[in-house]
Length: 143
Image (cartoon, rainbow, N blue to C red; front, top):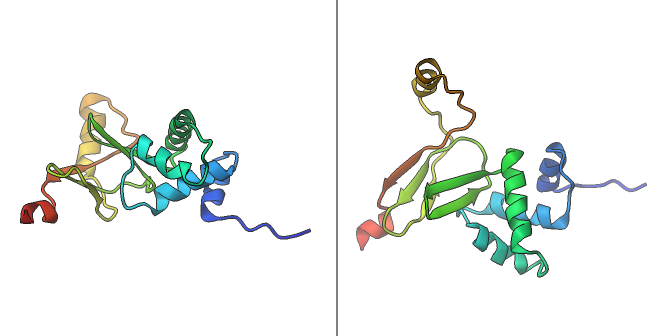
């Protein structure tokens, strides 16, 4: 019997109790390696290059499943700008109001007093967090 070597993405899929398929592996790999925050349509276009029969509906379902399992996060910088991030851990995002680019900052911590206040004063249980800082990127400031 041969030894089976799994890619990191395949291990993540298994650890999330998901069936490992080439398409799921490719989608997760694309998001984990991307420094961008691609939209559903962008993910679909990129995956079609390797798997031409993958439908847009499959991409939507897969991204929703990955979000549900905590493998990725949805990054909604605005109502019209939704992308996906292969790093599900908390980290701030910088959003350029001019070119709409979204940049990741290193992982950080949201001040705990906000979470405590949400619980104590509003009875709200925080289960995820995102932080967006809006402004202009260095490229747009030069122009």
